[in-house]
Image (cartoon, rainbow, N blue to C red; front, top):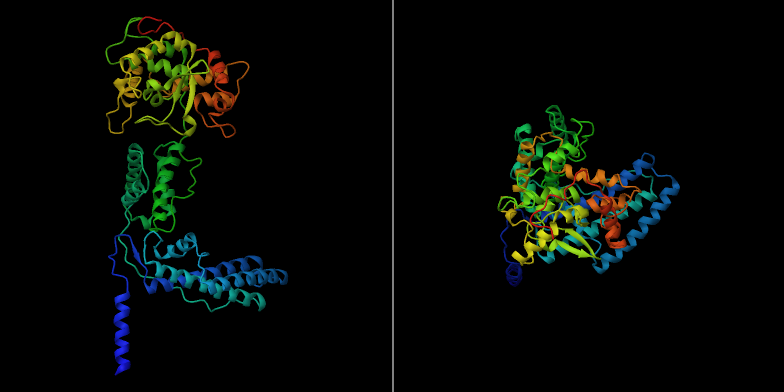
Length: 488
């Protein structure tokens, strides 16, 4: 009777001492005894399987005597370390990376695992013991005839119902995975919807490499450029990769899909010709007269583009504080520091000396006048371009205007755009004799140089090499007469 009472009392105290029941949130995985057993079994099996693969790769399975002795020494050292760790109950060798790899086949991860510290420690200890036992079997192989051992615990497969992973869900996961640019997010979604139409809305887990490959073939048949096809595949792959990281699928079917040679070759934009430039720099307003109210940007943006090679957004987002003097030279600081400011990549952040013709045209006079009118430190160079559109892009209004204006002037070649000014500057810089060097030209335009960073010359040599380069650039047309207000 006393024994029965003690047994019941122990059961009650054990129950009271347990952790309170915690509700399982969406996406979490409870560390059950079944899951623990499966993970431990997988740890030992993985160790022996990797050794099987190595031995099969060497000579069938049986290792040559020299390799067997080497393996025996290595495994013996491993076993000694593991034994000592087991005695000390030191589980530091079971790293988060290793634990995540062992949890991955069961659609689990440390971030999603619902377990208290004691249960997690016990799991790590069981894994350590399993690796120790597996290492003993490796030594038995080294000392024996090399036959496979059959003492591995069976792989425990957990049956876990999961909701269907739709392709649209891929975009949701990708969008939540990091801070995304709204325009990029919309672009990714549009590409995904295009693929969904092709794949007839199959679940994400049923998408194969063949599906992705067939889509690439279809895009090429539809006339897409090779680079466009490659970018679409990269977009799809990026979303699948996030699903892999969340342990929802094992691998991305869009990984390493070959796109080279598919689709039409991309036709690059070209520089404006001199006749085209003359048409584009004809002004509907008279010389020394301001353009129509709130349209000053129409006067200055093309001239800045021609003389700096800056991208349209880089110009439209300029602030008055970006016009500076460095070592006695007037420069434009192109950066991504202001609100709604953005650059294409890190090398696009640069300091560009202002061309003498642009100074002669009166840009600095305009800048000083705007500073007097609006002394705020973050005042925009063109306040009429204050972004109020969906993507907070200050260049949207100017971009639409330039497309209409170019057509009105008769410059309608689809191989030209505002970006053509960038090509004009590059061509003018290449005409300089002697050549200032690729590093200087790349620092001026913000192109990426694998050997020298875009900001190398300003940081190491100062601004003078860039100033010397800009001062030697001869523009294809004379812009000095296109002044706003009286030239000072």
